[in-house]
Image 1 (cartoon, rainbow, N blue to C red):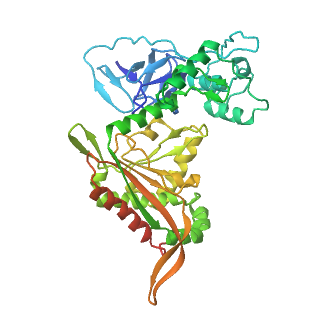
Image 2 (image 1 turned 45 degrees about the vertical axis):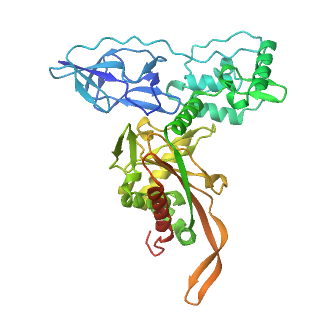
Image 3 (image 1 turned 180 degrees about the vertical axis):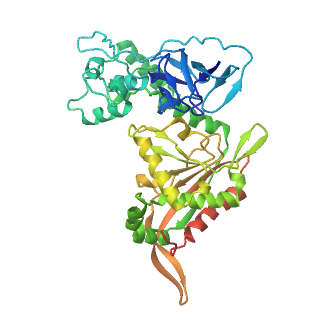
Length: 445
């Protein structure tokens, strides 16, 4: 007999721990390879951990509700064989000695919301840290949550349930408790003593004071903020712009979108078409698809395109299309639609947000003409596309130059000047526009 230690797998560059939600298997249960052993949650996604081997669950080392660091042993599986190993869905390695049981600290949850009489309410029902944080922000008490049905396993109340409840809540949230006078004075003094950018708002709880409302960031927003600040500190940003004539693509899409949907069951938007152009341009300029490690340049052979996606709670996530250069337009359209839908419904897996090598963001979806995006570390470039609008343009014809109504789109590229100079960044950006403008309108669907 042999034992395999199941470890909590890596779930993204900024994710260091996860909450154990539900043990799908218990001690003594038989489990097959890749069968779900436990459900976990982070502030970004809920996910499942598959079993790295077939066998019997001989030990479970953490409880539901525990917060476990990435890399810790969470369970032990007994299998046929002769050596003890430590396994995860990503790696399997031999160890010379049995692994020690890891003691996991109790879950660090948000402060329990209070009831109308000011008394803290406790609940036997499990709520993830993210749900508790959202409840606190919206002044929803645990007693109120306890009355709501959840869509998760064992009636668990999920982030999606919370978002739906907030949107459809019939009554206004209970008013926030007024900040103590000392707190108001501290806020006022801080605002007068230094520019607002220097005030550490995270030290104050959510409160309203006159015409000023101070809102505590949720953990996901803090992670985004830290990631963006780190990127500006790490990479000297340069941004270039180009305008692409999207008229041929616009007309082709209008002509074929109904047939495309009927044939493939997915809408063809502009995003997969733009991604197709990006993957071709990366093939021409592979040094845009790199990362930096000290004084070393790491050239990536996989072309994994991240697509910045806005979530219903106004946060941002970047699911990744793996090996996008190996997909045709149909494959890209299906991947874009699938990831966007699962992102908005909190159904992404940890692997869906890993290993991106280049990022695309669509500010045109908000009606913006252009944007200057911040590089998604450790990548070295990010592209932004704006709204497609009608503009007068010069068209070359056999009768000479004419002015006609064209559909134009601004494209910007922010790149890391440590390794991407103006020639490379500008040439890559221009090549993407060339591929878009040279789109074959006779291509079949």
